[in-house]
Image (cartoon, rainbow, N blue to C red; front, side):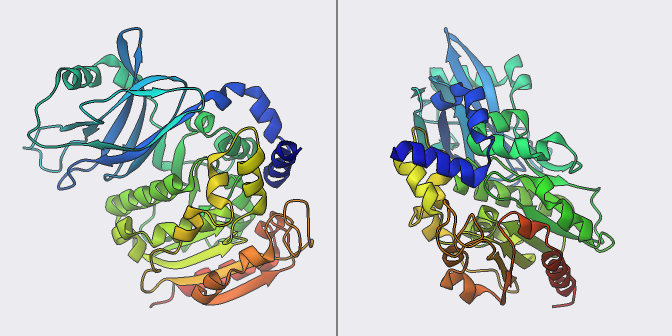
Length: 417
């Protein structure tokens, strides 16, 4: 009975089509994860790519890739099988330095993934001067082969897109929650521009929550003064572990800062997206981009987690990765404020209180998240101001009062510090 309650409750929390998506791809339940950290030289190297190489009947081939602007985290959703990890650093800034250093996991070491198994905490690193073993030389040969051209690159930074795009649809949001691997294959992770970059206008980054999608922001986008602001949308599979989303967001913002040298930056995030935004701006690795964040606004964010996520982790027949992170008391929730807000960053907290209790949020709530979770004392203490609205969890994004408040906060962000 508890398993049934767990699945049904999380389905109610995140969307009615969830069970259909799961039923359409039962193979997703057999998938595992390979994730870790890429460690390559940082001086003069612009980008690196981790390649997932599958050993199949004696013939190796690249089946996926993950690019990073700087050394950072990577993640692959994989079917059962045997895999190797290798990486190439991008061309250096110095054109006379033609070497492309290769990194790999172990010496290298095979990763054997069974049904639903994962390998995490993997280091893919480059150590200058080490001798290439026979297996390492074989991997280097694979990276020079034709399979690299067909590798899936699920990372899009600064790509121009419209909110009408299918990847920003409600269906895409549900796929991202219930089947992150399929989302990565079909849509990719991305920080998208809704219009060509303009150095005269301040970027406003919009971040959706669990089961969310960029099109949810249509009402907010329509009310933003586009003569002074340009909108960027962060689209990610919300069923993935949240620290990966935090690291990816930071990596993408760092790449865009290096590419465009934008000035000030505003971030507006809904629900679980607020957790990502707060964790990202406080990370020691945030570097220069975080110092440019002049305004952070979170809307209906579950600072203390969601009790139904704990029920799903404990009793559901399968576990979505992000449930682990939004379960009350999780390691991720404890780490969200491990770093302070950058100096000069104004933070405002918005929340809704319409509807009272529900099956997924008993007591006072917005029908998805309890008021107690949204009004965590530590979050209130950081906030310059707290705003409450008579809206539910989804309706708060289309509220005229909320869009008016956001316009006023953005107006203030353009004023000289």
